[in-house]
Image (cartoon, rainbow, N blue to C red; front, side, top):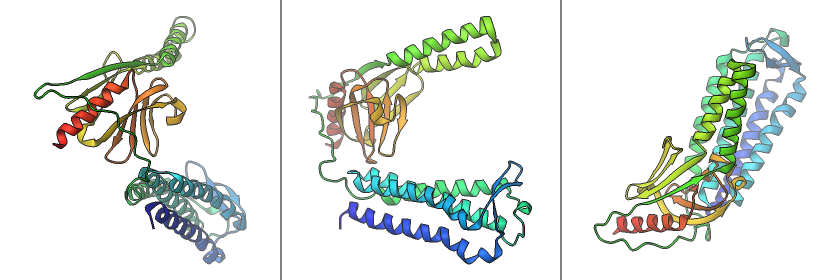
Length: 314
């Protein structure tokens, strides 16, 4: 059984077990719960809404089942281990989140006669969210195993011939006309607000415009230390990827929507810095993830990365 089939079997079993675990407390403790049951609370922990006990599972279960179906399909259909890892993280976090919400709701309703008497301390949210985060991390570690499926490995770019003792550096800029226009327009609106309408409102708008403009361009540098992406004329913030974190470099065409949109994007299998669509430098990391950087003329950068990797492996 390969890793994809193993993931399918284990994730289906996990989904079924979690579904049973979510229903069981309501069945076993139904005689100790009020009907209707308190289902919503104000910020001070006072119950302000209720739902018939028989309908409560119909509120909780669809969210979990939809999440589980999505994660199982995505992890099984994905060709790379990071797809399985991301789906396992979602299954773990979703299970702990829904179990925590249900467990907390049942606990505070337990042995009350009327739902109006129920109180829910807001600190209950902390262990629920913390448990979901820990479960996501464990799911990622368990799912991030085994090789990618055949054919999932990117076609590596060529390698440069490095002269012995010579230090090679590749630098290429990239900018986003869209973000530049948005930043400029936002700053113009902000100036108008400050001068003509409402200065307190205009100042934060101006800051937003400056931030967008500052992140609308970047400079990509490849050298013996790795790949560095510095944003804007201020050359900050900087994203650094060490050579020992990279397995292979390639070039591919990507549209912004394929990686979640413009700017800095993080998806289960991909991290991307997208300032424009088109050719991108693609780094397959040792973690199994792809790091995608939209940059002008990325072929030379990919070739230098592969040459430096080959030099280190000698």
